[in-house]
Length: 132
Image 1: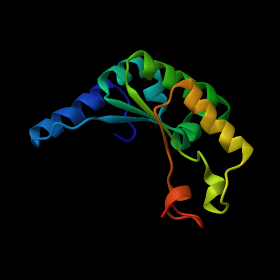
Image 2 (image 1 turned 60 degrees about the vertical axis):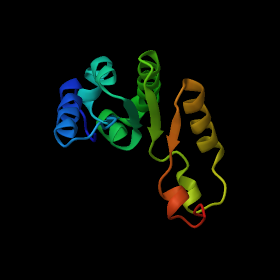
Image 3 (image 1 turned 180 degrees about the vertical axis):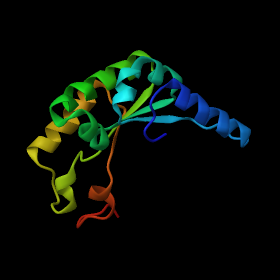
Image 4 (image 1 turned 120 degrees about the vertical axis):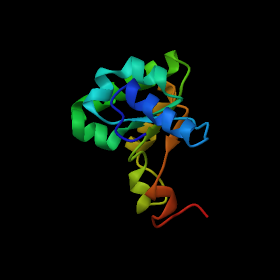
């Protein structure tokens, strides 16, 4: 669920899915100030949590982003939720066949913090070196 603010948003999505006859797993994209303010209950209500670093960085500021990423991952692990870290993980690979040292370190830190998955986009799909 994009731009989830709180547990009520997640529950509303779950209710709509059930009304449609679906038993969907709900992914909460954490990308707003309100989501950070309500993080424990948002994580509790979700099945999966995504650290949506692009919008979260714009919303909260890049200086705060690294610490927030660690907090979101830690809260998700405490509640035994799957957590995905996304946005510009290996952005240089859109143009280059190998990532930068900083990108390798960024991915490694997310993994060491406990993320279950790293989401790639253009770098593995539409860049100069897509996965075939």
